[in-house]
Length: 193
Image (cartoon, rainbow, N blue to C red; front, side):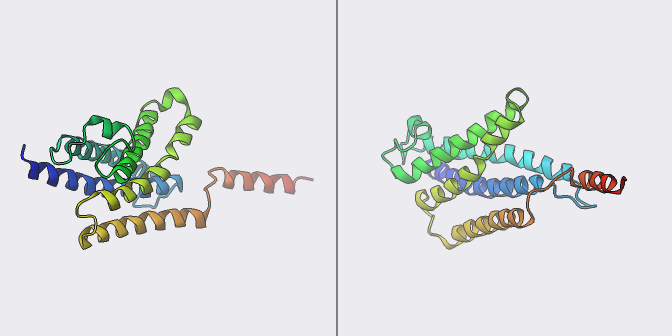
């Protein structure tokens, strides 16, 4: 495989990973909000979140593998597994390794969810809120075209989408699926003599 093809594949897979992971975070926030409309039932949001997550992981693996085997950077597998161990752009690449390992923890616990329980899964799943911005910062410092206008525009778009989703969640508060039942129960209790 030519060095140029590896370079394009690494960069392309990195950009696609950023777009997909941003969408995963947005849909994750929406699914927690129990977002649904008549034309968009909640199971679609959850299913889309899960399928986009799998696709994002696939592109992330392509990004990592092509970066490791690219002879220009000569990273080696240790740099992909041990944060801040690479001689090549040590800090920025180390951030990518940290983000990938946080994502790996999310994937593993999602696969083991039925055995580890919802509480442990949810606790580890919160790492997505750390892994995503770390991955964004990794892209700013690692890529050879990180200063390109088109890539900055994509990054700004991703940051805005995630920021708006998180803001909407904070403003609207956490949903209480039993709020209606509790209110009806309180009304019945108050009406009793």
